[in-house]
Image (tube, rainbow, N blue to C red; front, side, top):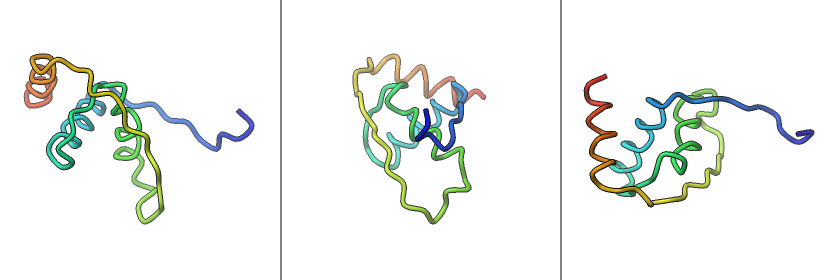
Length: 76
């Protein structure tokens, strides 16, 4: 941990928002754990204008489950 400058947490709602962002804007289907990094970037607005790399992985999500996640976000 000596090389870690900062850590943050994100909510489930922020993860679902990141999944929606990736689907709508990037045309990528990303499972919840694969969207964690994007959720952090979207939450941490202080990095605007910086060069940031985020690893996005995992499209292993059932389309029915993806629709449920997106429906949950619409209700919030």
